[in-house]
Length: 427
Image (cartoon, rainbow, N blue to C red; front, side):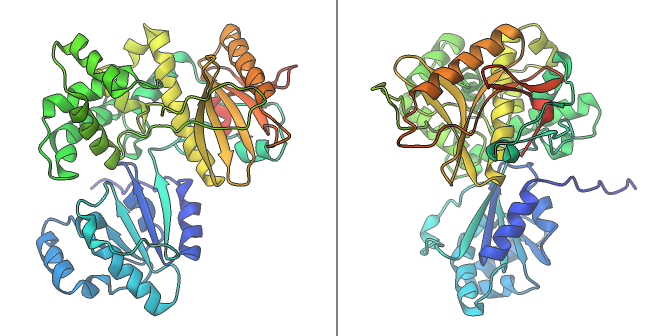
């Protein structure tokens, strides 16, 4: 028998611990295979797996007739794939009220419940949320964490050396993705994980999420089109036109919207909202969401690409690298009680990522593969945006950063903009 694989610590560990102290029920949600159950098991004292083959029918009958039986056990009690029986929501909330204590239940789920009519309570005051994504480079030990976002928000920066990733290594990390089961495997086996994930989504998950029949072929076509438009503000109409141009056929916009909504419910795609700062100018801010997958490997697998394909087309690789960087920035920023946004105005000025904390502090980040020309371009964008912000109505940015894929050192430019390799970043 092979030895049990050691648990790889996640940044979500601390978030879960905090929420268990603050809330009676903690909902851990995110894409399949991103490690939700494994992470929850580190802190759970008892567990029930709702999709356990030998018992799932019995569990479903009990959920309908006597759900309290399923909630008995040492706390925190983990209910894995709870969304299969949405009545767990109200039952857990009720028991939390009766017991009058926090840290009672952990609910993990890889999709939103189909029938939300069985959830009569909002969960306000009883439920805390933890969003998990595939692993960041810091969690998978491909970043040495010499630069902390938290310290940047506090005004602390010193030049540091990072894990120097070359283009070939970066291409591999993009295509491998942050799937925990891929870490430590041979390159061929690791790369296979993302293709297996696409197969699962197209064959089963997109139907299981709401029991609506959707074509496997159309799902794969739509995923390919979405991959071609990642990091853009493409409309459903644009995606429809792309499908027609590349596949000789198309789906209407209503059908596309239905497929995309299902993909959101199973956490395959995670678009980025627009940031709306106070500006000195009268520039109109564009509010369309930016298209992203939750992990870059979903995009490369959807298009059937591997590391060698990316090496031959660095422009395309740059877009996939942006998705990887956004994934990591989201993972890091949420541990700091913040969110990641995108900025674009009607004058064409963009900022790839705005890291905005709940206390009002924010950092501006441009994402570039590397090289002096691209770094200069990114720094120029950041400085232009910073000048537009009305600092009489909101604080100035805590930092401006060009996040690069390649490069050995993190340093501060003469204009104050930081240049940070992704192999040196952590939360």
